[in-house]
Image (cartoon, rainbow, N blue to C red; front, side):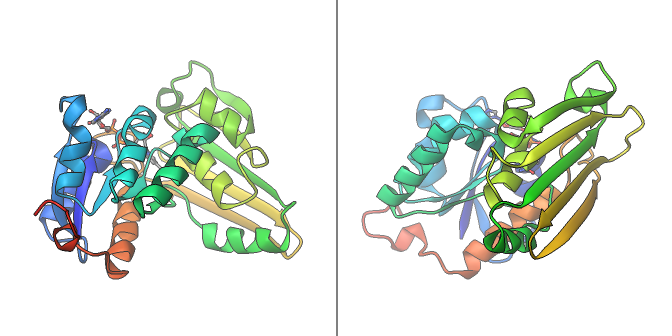
Length: 251
Ligand SMILES: NC(=O)c1ccc[n+]([C@@H]2O[C@H](COP(=O)([O-])OP(=O)(O)OC[C@H]3O[C@@H](n4cnc5c(N)ncnc54)[C@H](O)[C@@H]3O)[C@@H](O)[C@H]2O)c1
């Protein structure tokens, strides 16, 4: 499966190295598009040599290119999950996927336990799900310390568009982005990004603590890259038809 990368920063750049080193089973490198690529040619570049596109470029890129990639029949892996707090973006991706016969997915990224929580909320759709995130003030872009935000996952995505990906991912996987509660704390002493998920449901009570190291070159949790690797390996194992074998596809 050929993997094209939209964004070549912390996540995209690391993925590019892993793909080139053969560390993503069943996958090889397609195109890699950075922010200096001419906007009008991005979709053609990505879809011309990729069976699947990984978006690792930010919410604006999801809006600009996500639907076009899907409409062209290429699967899409969305890292900037915060963009999906906008229902219109979500609906647009769904419609384009249907039209293009493609699929889009949001990998768990920097959090986990979603399989269990998604199962539990099938038993109890009214479950209480809370995410508590602790980062340094610098990583959050705030001057304050202590609790800097409390609200829903959707509100968190508006307040912290760059760091609320996990809140939206948790909301989408469980009771919804308007029901999942989010508390964000700024702690100057935080050496790792900490996420704690608690869920009180009719079938049990669950608590996950996730302490993430960041990529050497930035503030992105390193595990996110490996979450994308796992998502790609699953897509590849499901056996997508290589685009070169599709009728009318560029060779
Ligand atoms: N789901 C998660 O758990 C999770 C975790 C960490 C980061 N993220 C998100 O993933 C995305 C990528 O993270 P990162 O750490 O690699 O960010 P980054 O800032 O290191 O890299 C982003 C790259 O995208 C490029 N870019 C921006 N707009 C572009 C455009 N229109 N076309 C092409 N390239 C463009 C930038 O030049 C940059 O190289 C961010 O939106 C981030 O918030 C999600």
